[in-house]
Image (cartoon, rainbow, N blue to C red):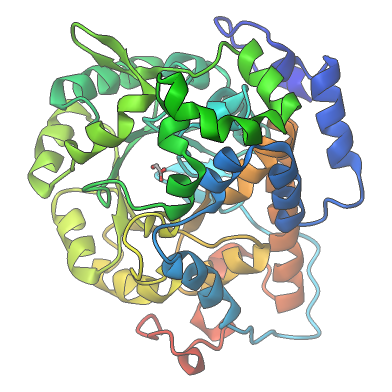
Length: 422
Ligand code: GLV
């Protein structure tokens, strides 16, 4: 399967990307098991494979994790109104997002520190997205060079922007992204400071990332209980630097500096203006939860907004995204595309989001679990699970095409979700 993709000229072959080495082989064996039938199964594998600090970084949310759970619950509160006794030979799942056709309405969200989840990291995820006919969004917090990530994909790849290190640093990354063919810039606007992730604090994530051996020491024994992850991490060269955040006079930003740099890197609306000057392609504003902010993004020329609370990782008790969606769809009046993330674990979730007005969804944790479990094949498995779910759901709903989904297929008024999309 891998051979059908363009070979990334400047990505060195590594065991994790060839699929031939024994470690990768054993990862694929884990997936072959009939135990992996849904995303939660991949989550279980990820939990087994990763040190707790890394697993909790993916899995956890901010503070009491109210929003993290509310995102999931919002999907569980929606029921379908199927049309029965309908059969059709083909299910149309393709959708156009920012002018690019993707094979089904799921894109890979930016996930920071992916190279710590698996050495293949961002390269493996981009390759998997292309293999499945969808788009990959590369986080600024990437351990792989944006050029290598782009080279791993023959599909659309977008660059997610934080202003880590300031405007000059961001402009340099934007220019690199433009040069190698990234097709959209995703500006995350919900990260005035990093959210308080209590699991990370308890697991000593900051200490483990620091250079002080004394600070790390209490947290090292847990890491040692995951020798396979540790061996791969060491073989990959240890803690990666941020390959796309090049600070003048200092070089690549250290991962240890991310938190403090984020606190100095809030994106504000006026920033959208210089960002638009620097990037002449489509801009996606990610992290919108109110109609007012969605309108503001439209007025500043956003080609798409992502209704997002950062997977419940930033402001705890921020609205669940499915609940925020209908008002935003109504407010933008078709002037921009509306995407959604947060809480997508099943194809039924994808279909519900589309019924409520999203054009497509982004998944983060769902594929990060797969990446942890088995690198690229794990991401492919996550996407295949979601794709099969979406197709089955459409057939059981009696709806032949994602473009025909709408509020009449869901019973959302009774759920407490505001129903302004109908
Ligand atoms: C980064 O964006 C994170 O949520 O950790």
